[in-house]
Length: 355
Image 1 (tube, rainbow, N blue to C red):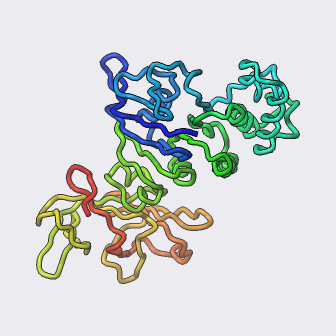
Image 2 (cartoon, one colour):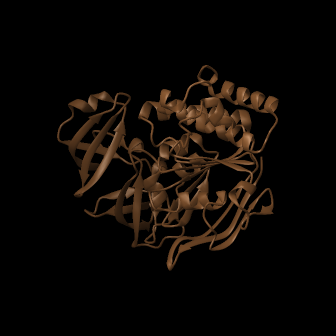
Image 3 (cartoon, helix red, strand yellow):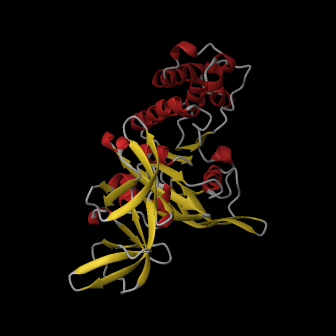
């Protein structure tokens, strides 16, 4: 296990910048998830840590040792890719032990560590099979086993579950989290799936446009998103946003929406009267009420089993409510709702959170 420190790291391809200066300290044994949309730079950052991409400027340290100039094989890390990259002519056991055999590791040690990894991953009955005789989930376990037997300082995962169906992804998420608990190894996991990020991470690194937007625990990003990007990316369905103006006077503090409707909010000391703001509320925090202050047109209802997603139009803009109250299935074309003060988020004109 090892800590990983990233200081002022930038990456450019020619004159095209991809990463604009990343600073991140990963603690020994921590599970970090890099999350963001395609093209945000998360995989590029992972590949620079692995040594598969050169660092344009800045420094990467693994176990306090600068690794910028080290070849991937000398960094003592193991990487699990989106494509399983298994040798089709080798058995499961041969695939898992390949790196150890290249290092001329003693046969008895190879047998022992492969058996131990296979037991952790439930691969014992499959050791003699070749990849073509395995399911997608089993192949991903073999790829993980190949990484585990190396006993590296850190594990790097590059969207390892993207090729699996929804049920298998759910199962493999649980297995990866359990495995991390058993091994206690420093892990960095790249995904565009915010559900994977929320369920796996000790801390999430939200990235957009080559810039780290926020670093924190999953609930930090859910409860207190630093900006509009994080607020909209974390959570499913995504947060609702409404433009308005902040007004405070006497005993009343509110945001006036586009149609002049006031939404009561907690006072924000850093905002002046009339300031343009964006008001945010998560669909699951909207309170449906026959006497609600806000009225919206109901466009579509989506039952999901556990709950119901209501698609509405509020001042001509899409708005969603998530509820477990099945009585809404018989509601009319209008819905009235309230926005609890303690569930509202306010963002300034630059999109940054205001507390």
